[in-house]
Image 1: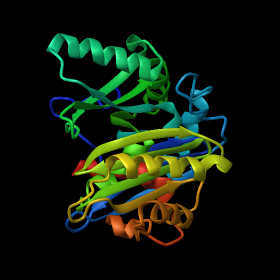
Image 2: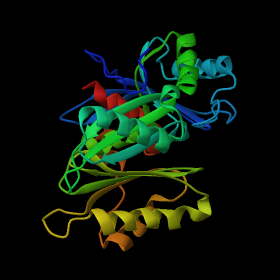
Image 3: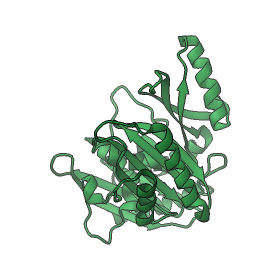
Length: 312
């Protein structure tokens, strides 16, 4: 099974994906319709016991793999996907960590040493303990190199792999929740920046995209009472340091709000107050996904469905 974000020589990305988070599991299969639009072919979401998946970067996530495998078998059966063997997997947000590293120009040898030092310092773990994805981004305005680095502990990733192996499933692509959700913004590019706010009971991850590339990625651990203040701070950092002063279509052009911690309406109000904008949070239909009914929660399937869009 491929490690986190491993890019094989001939990668395959299935249209079927699994999403796991504390207290919830979802499976989806997408079908392309016209242009970049798509619809749910099959999908199901279960509220699961919170003891089954305990998201953490440091500690074991799955205390009983056999029990979780049984629940996933029932979930896939209810969606008519039990016979599917190829999946993408959206990991819980707290299980992974993501950094954008900025590095001054270095020789090839020095670059690797600096990257190693920054990765180990940023993630608080030895490189040998981590499954790492490292993608080079566009240079910053000062011409410095930038890298998007995603990490998960190898021992924790192995727990998820073992559960899938029990079911005879193979995961060709494994990503943290926020990068699955972010595919809806990346695949529907626009002039101006895009903001993803991915909230949970433990805080939020905020991602600003510019030209389909991550500009700012920040994960904040906070209580629900602290959520609004921390979100303000994130937006102020973006406004004061990253928004160009001139040019058409500059600043935030799109807003996507997923998950817990804050309502979509309140998040939109804070964004507009802070950036002097007039945005509303995008719905599934704005992003090119047809849901079978308004009762079906886009939030619960946004991450795995985002991964499934990579099949085309």
